[in-house]
Image 1: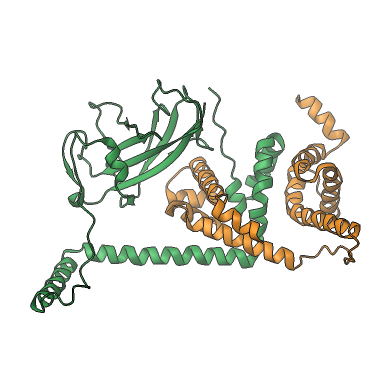
Image 2: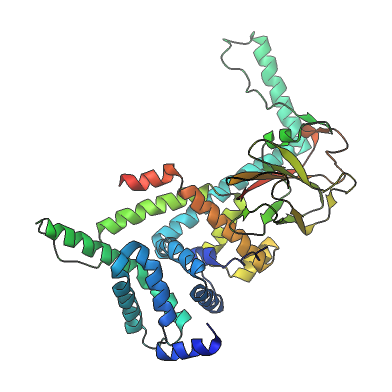
Length: 256
Length: 176
């Protein structure tokens, strides 16, 4: 099996400023590695663009504005999660409902938005169902495939790193293009899903070993990080009442 | 190449590897002009920075002059075509013109739209890079090793390239 290529800091060269040593190392590597040289030639256009202070500051501003909007939503969400806030909101909601009922529902045009359906899963639930759950990142969990580009061949192992800021019960599901879904972490039912905070390396087959790959195939990988002690293989889960959890997804390709 | 052979080659032509790499990379787009362009790029870099003695430093400078030279070459070709067609075009002006500005604006819009579609972590890393925060500090902020940071960044950049090469993005460039 070929050794995965150690990523060169090309994106850092494009978007940021490498130290003199980092830049000299990158240039030396590029001279020895034609693929890296080509990658840099391609990336050079973006780099040149961002050397223009106007574009650079515009992109910085765009990212900053987006981050501020997100943090405003996060603050609102945090406020909504406080018991006192919920009580206040419940009071307002009750008052609104009372007014609507008192007035006989009005003309019928101003109803409430339908809430997303609550999902309860149990050990018999088809694993594909978990790919229908919306992505969220309450725990700040992150999975990273240790190969770039993320392309694997049958017989190789996919190696990935799970980054957990806090302990969590972690399940990793793999879904093929034809819908076949399998849990690749924990590897068996007897293994605990609970992980402590920090980085954890996992490895698994890119596809089931019996799969016949004739054309490149995209594979989705979903990480479910749930409160410690939660086990979707052993008990039922009411996702609406679960509390803080993360669902993250990455994809990779499997080529013949 | 063995280290002795490499040392000998370096003695003969200290910038051989730079010129070979550039010629190879430029040949796809500029064909027979690639060699001339490479020479011009290296000459320009050495003219501006005559004290450069090592290949990595020269390559760094070449990347800086590359786009400028590529643009000049494209303009030269346009001029040659126009002259052949009997059109009276002005002589080549190597300063950035309105065509470059339009192209850059469009490229920026695509880049910005692509970056906005990236995940939160990717955007966070890019924001820190744009702020020119050193690699170790970014890694420290994200509580990851620098190698892991480079891997994450490579994946983000790959995603960005995938997003910006989608038809809805590339067709925008094509329209201009």
